[in-house]
Image (cartoon, rainbow, N blue to C red):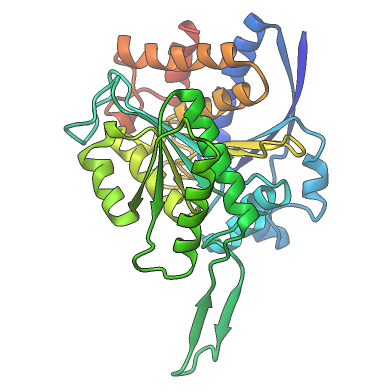
Length: 352
């Protein structure tokens, strides 16, 4: 029997509604594969806590999480708390404090889920966006000057380091080699004259260290268009923090719903716990109605299983997801159905 200590951070909005289904799936597949999960839930790490105490989590939050094997996050964000406050108070400190420098976002068109894109067909679109997760455009370098005056200024600096770019590129090339695919690098070196040429140079450098992996580069604007026009042509797409963030949400929409998309925040060296989350956010407009799609969180649980060394268990989960979509008409409203979160989860569990 293998035991894992999992931190649950439900967070805001529909986060507390989608983590219980993910936990049910984990426990079900764990029984089949001899895996036991011991959960510690941090229920008040949220925007509600921020409104009450002025902080999204306690000062020793990272220390409380440090000895966990993995973190499963629900969602972060509420209309009453500015996004830059909520994210920089919880999600980003975890990512950076635990050196989760790879944000992994797999995108797949499932049979039974209609894509809004005519050319995106099940069995053909199966790609992964590898997003640099700790530096790039999302740095804290910069500031605001002369607030409220006619000459007010805001300066935001992008920070790219050789170490930071190289490690995410090596991960992307390694993943493409394992998948038998190729790497596409997102760039904008015709407009950003310092950071993106630096990125391109490092891509070429790391490609030489992975001679068996074909690669190409695409300017981000053209790449965004091709994600819609030719989504099946891509396999592993590696991008900076901002570019990867935008591309992965676009790809999820191409797959039919951002509600089904999972993400992993990985520390590949396993020196710190990695964190897994659905992409959909807190969705305050549907929170409390019991209709949230749990597939993003369940997919995140599958990514967590794979990271923890249980690829067969992870495959069981993704196969069950594929089966419920392909063989039944049970759908939550975002997929055109009327099932509740609980009803959808119950159906999936029968196929697991």
